Image (cartoon, rainbow, N blue to C red; front, side, top):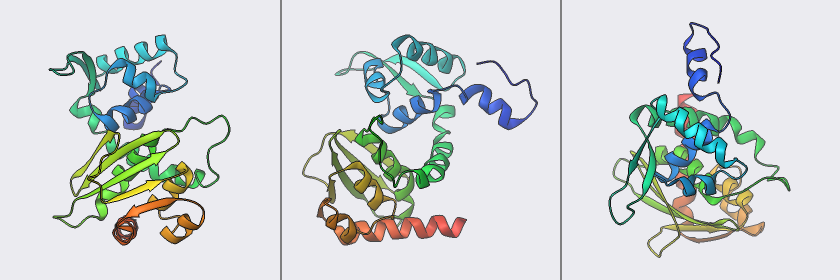
Length: 219
């Protein structure tokens, strides 16, 4: 990307992250942590292989990611965010909230949909609603697959797949899952529209309300 050649923090930041796909690569690495090239390609439908390789090389040069060989049992090269790259979580959190008004219409026929994107929304926004010693694990199952989100007051961890050790499971269309997690739909409204919710529904409702209240207080 060509530099804006402006002595301005916004311009300097965009010199690094303003290229197409860069923040979405950060999104994937923030979601799952250290990832193989094939994992990133899977999470970035639509990106050409040569363009992904180019972006990763540039991001490494800019100090956003590092490339290393993961220890056993993975034992293969992975990419992961540096401290500077992980500092973009606040940027993604702000973009998550800013983009929320565009979501209620649901995905178009051309939109790719993957469950970890909804899980990342939950991770970035809901952990703020937890009490200091509270831990909650959410399961999300959609047509795109299943993921597990572990929330604590300091952040979140997301894994592919589900197990029995979850407090609440939401299963159904991404639009309905996202609607509940964003507080745009109540649990009852989402269930009436076909979303399956198992486990602590009251716990989920309280978490969403608490997180939205804290965000509103900051605003």
